[in-house]
Image 1: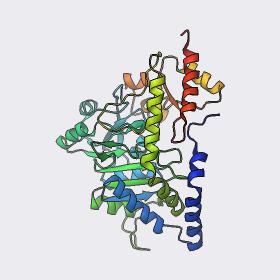
Image 2: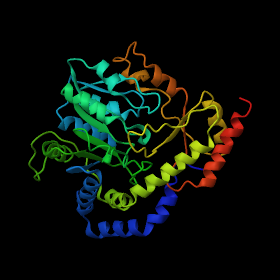
Image 3: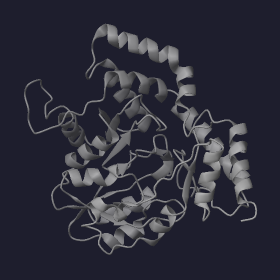
Image 4: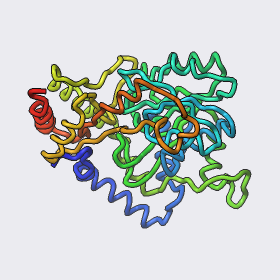
Length: 366
């Protein structure tokens, strides 16, 4: 059995450090917004190159609170991708805004400045680019466009922790950014967790209040907030992994490049790196007209694989009211062909060769 992500192997490496940290938390009984959360926030801000990093309960909450803090609200339009997890658009709906879905680049799977520009209306207030699968969006052109139209940028970095563009981390470029620490992420907790990153003192101050019932002084509440605090125990796990994130991402990139080398010449498309930024391969996603055949062949050999995402957001029932008649040809084509293969820091060359061998065998004679 080859899993999508081998968290057991990663835990075995980190076990002494994590268990010592957890024991210290249990002995101190400082469970909520304790020293590990504060330390992790400082360390994450330093790594990301931002002034503020604020731990929250999930990646979805990170996007939600970032939108609120940036003043996005009822009736505003936020341009984003339909080829992403639903949390991207959920967060927009949570604040009463309208997600406006645009098509994606066929190589990077990310939205482009050209597609964004065509969707701008007088109600457009923000853009939420998604750095999908760890591939940075073209933030230079998106930022130039947004400045010209006075639009906020909230980056969805749920899948791109450690990805960079010309030496700048994703999440450090827009007005604010949201990260997810779901266990399978490049930087993953052992439960839910998230982070808001920003260079704005005002945005950071609002997010800190929003995550803690609208309060920054105990029992004094300035606004209606939420219970969305990063757990102290999760911060212990994240601090241990943050020290190793660049190594983890280097291993992912090496695995991805070996996959692409072994799969060259087959009737499929391997992931594209546009050279604009450093791809960190949260997912290794290929495209094939024979996707279902490959899925079944891998499953038969107990090799995990997944389809991210089989139904794009503009085709989801929950958004039907806002997307009647909307056609996004590239998104729809990719949704019908995409297949993600196992990828994680502990994936071995032998496992990659085995997976590639199953794919080659399945495609012989096609």
